[in-house]
Image 1: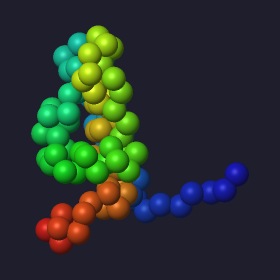
Image 2 (image 1 turned 45 degrees about the horizontal axis):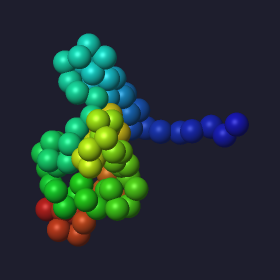
Image 3 (image 1 turned 90 degrees about the horizontal axis):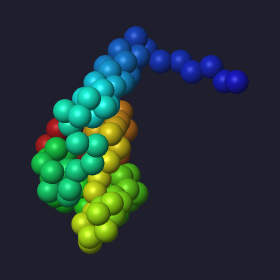
Image 4 (image 1 turned 120 degrees about the vertical axis):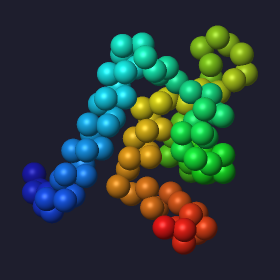
Length: 101
């Protein structure tokens, strides 16, 4: 098994991200948040319809058909939130978004 080395600030960031995702999962389990989102809700959370569409195209997030059998797509909230919290998020951003940082 290989050792993983990270700085204290990287570890802190990882723990903060894990805590945020864990809190969202707890809210879902308590019924306070929906476990899935429609595309407009997901776009609002990630801040851009274009970013959401690209993440879907690139396989960063994977929408699934609505369980009711209609044509709607649903997006797992935890999957979306995890992508947003990802330390590698800069690799998902387009050039305009990267330059705006």
